[in-house]
Image 1: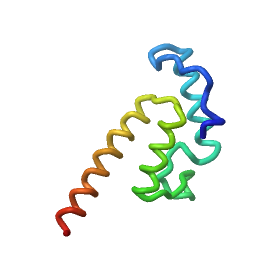
Image 2: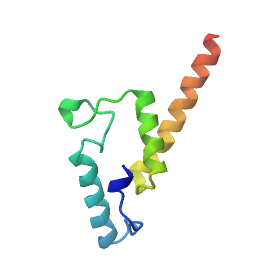
Image 3: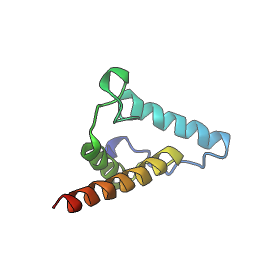
Image 4: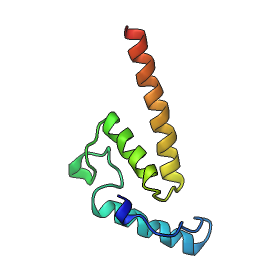
Length: 93
C-alpha cells in the first residue's frame, strides 16, 4: 500500500483540483480491487470479512493513504462494528 500512496497530501475535495486528485486515487485503488474491499470479487471487490476489512483499514491509515469522506466514514463504521463484535464476545462469556 505505502508504495502507491501519493507523496503529497491530496487537496481538499471542495475544489476541482482536489476532486480530480481523489478520483485518481480511487482509480488507483480500484485497479487492484482495493476500492470496496468487502464487495464480492465478482463485483470488483476482494470479498473481505469484517476482521480482514478492519486489518485493511488499519494498514490503509498506517500507510498514510488519503482520507476522503468515504474513507473517514468507513473508518467510523469499522470502529463501531468492532465495538459491537467485542460486546457480543463479552456477553457470550
